Amino acid sequence: MKNQKAVISFEDFCIKENLKFNEEHEEISWVGAINEASLSRIIRKIKIDREDFAVLTAERGELPRQENIKRNSILLKQLNQLKMGPYLLDGHWQEAPKGMDWEVVKRDNPELLVDKKENSFLFTRKSEMPVEDFKELVIDIINKWEQDSAVLSLNDEAFLIFRNGNMKSLGKNVTLEKIGDAYSIMKKGNADIPFLFEGSRQPTSNSSRHVFKVIGLEYVRGM
Image (cartoon, rainbow, N blue to C red; front, side, top):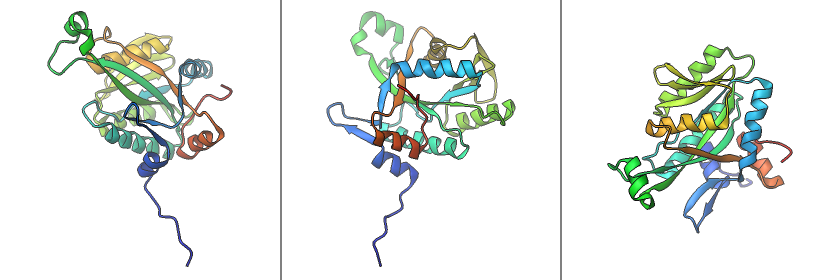
């Protein structure tokens, strides 16, 4: 009998095959490279196509990085099963030591602020999916992964949508800055504490483009 390859779970596949370990910085990151311009192009394309979209994550700040990678891998699988392959976004914010006021630390001891990274997914509503079903999907994901809220854009108006379905408008004419402001509010309850999106992940070679296709990640073509 010929040897057969062992079947591994989707999460293990993502971790084993599609994540690179950077020993110098002691962190694990998704395959591909961060491209700042690509995220602006994604938002521009969405606005031109008049698409509704959501931005959210399965990560939680108190969990180890490896656990957050697994959580996002499972969420990615769910989105792919719905044929809503997302873009992978890289963002970060600065966190004050536990129990210390962020504004005071920023003013008096900014060196104590620790940069925290987070991967999020941006995915669009399929044209055949009713808006209410799309909202319910986002609410279900928020609750499943114990998030406080997510960013939702409907008809070019940005909202924070919460676990109970309540929504807070962030204004018309969705921009990258408004999405970042929404994430700032989600993280700290204060838009003066910025969450910055560095860009979206882009493949850097034919092999990484194949990986993106296999695991169901979208990316900006022609860059």
